[in-house]
Image (spheres, rainbow, N blue to C red):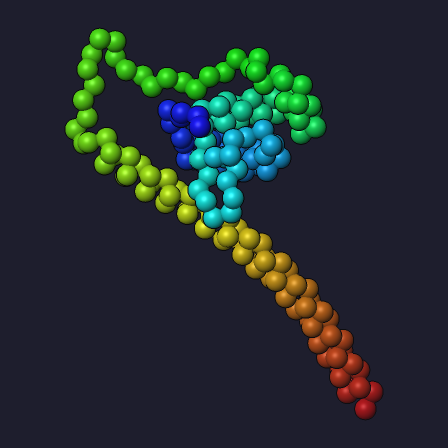
Length: 169
């Protein structure tokens, strides 16, 4: 069993790696075999990231920003290029020689941070759901506008026909 110093929630991991949550989801899906079991849990379990997972996210993002496509990144990972990637999780900043004290106990801060990250994730999921619903509604509006245009043409054709019949009488 490996000893881990820290595990990070998806929002924290994305921020530390310098990517969006959308990119994080895409990377997890595309490169799943290269991530830890924490980052690729079974359905229903929470996804967490080790410092090495975050380093892998940064590696993928770096190569993607440089123009590498998915296949090229997969080849680089398979060839072991990741072990030479010179990026490490930033160390927390502390003043040299000074003792750091918190006004609130750290466990309470961790609980608050956890609740905050859960709210952020729930809000992002809700945003995605609303975007999908908006797309459906916009499509329906487009259909209704097309039907309205057809009905207007039919009404116009019928009213022109009525006037022609009246004029002929």
